[in-house]
Amino acid sequence: MIAMVDCNSFYASCEQVFRPDLWGKPVVVLSNNDGCIIAANKEAKQLTHIPMFEAVFKIKHILIENKVTFFSSNYTLYGEMSQRVMHILETFSPSVEVYSIDEAFLDVHGFTYVDLRAYGTDIKERIYRYTGLPVGVGIAPTKVLAKLANRMSKKLPEYNHVCVLDTDAKRLAALEWADIGDIWGIGSKHRKRLQAIGVFKAIDFVKLPLAWVRKEMTIVGERIWKELQGTPCIEFMEIPNPKKAIGTAKSFGQKLPDLGRIEEACAYYITEVAEVLRAQKSCATYIHVALYTNYHSTIDKQYSNRTTITLPIPTHDTFTLITHARKALHQIYKSGYRYKKVAVNLTGLIPQSHVQGNLFEKPTKTTDTKLMQTLDVLNRKFGKTTVSSAMIGTRVKEWELVKKERSPRYTTQWRELLAIGVMG
Image 1 (tube, rainbow, N blue to C red):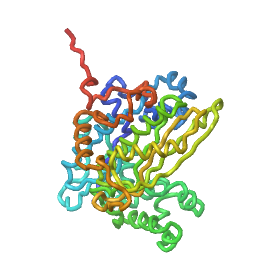
Image 2: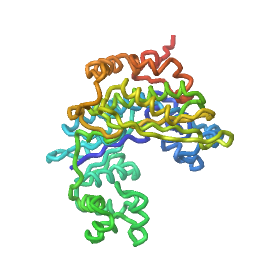
Image 3: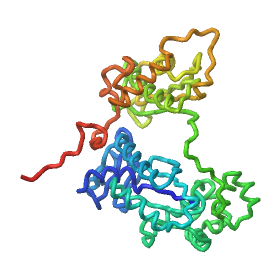
Image 4: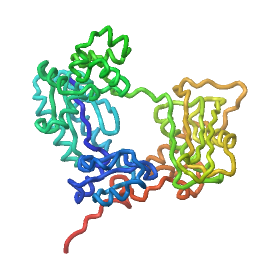
């Protein structure tokens, strides 16, 4: 059996944990630069006239009229709260696969004499007691069925956020309840294709001939079909596979016409992705840099461009990557435009132990792995970019993301700890 644990309205719930005055009230979280709504709690979702992913400036008056509290994205807070949840889950099973920031699979095979509903209820209650975050728990023989059970735990009140599909009768009842679009792995393209041939429920899908599924939906569809039949096909992975590419693309808080500040932002983003690169013990072969104006603007001239640099020797060295990113930026930058975004992406990732030298390139002093390790240790201990390249400069506030409505980082910053007033 496999358990799927999923935090309910995770971003919004993280905000409500430290704001009990917002319990039971509509809350939404905004994207980078407060651009659009990316998350909402159930109270906000019930306000159907608040569209998801709509530009905030278009609907801000609707949020205010409906007394919806909105927050800027606080990824530092969300990431730390996620770690707390995952640590709790590790006390329930020796094998935990972290699927996303708010979801995880638990291997519960061999729990023969355990009351699985009581087990799931214990998970739900302990996470809520220790973190204040509500979760749903679905338990079933396969990953796809566990995802479906998790969905049922939230959608059907009788389950009270814990659903166990431990018999074939329960499995078939779940398949009869679920729409084909509710099934994990069935995207919009396959959903429309299946509906066109009369497959509207999950039970209809499992009745299709396996040969048809294999031909029309490839091996991915075959695995989903078999998992819905109760046959495990999707591997349980405690250690995630290394990323094949690492990148970031963030809009500036304001439009930037000058190359200097764009270089500083680019250096900052390279610093971020290089840390992730080293964390998975990889080196990059290529660096891609792209530059964009704001295509939503009706008053600015528009321009975008991108280029790729092949590194002489694959590296994870921040300073070397910044040097080559600057070269790329100089190739694509044009004066006379107001830029909104720079994107960096590292590809051609290989294990750092497999890096080969270059007869025509002399390694620089900054390729010292110990130096990078020291930087990472200091920045983890004292905060991001405590020690960094001088190329980042001191004008971060002139281009960083807009975060006017960001809540305090309650769990990671001493100066932002929650203050509790004491009545005298």
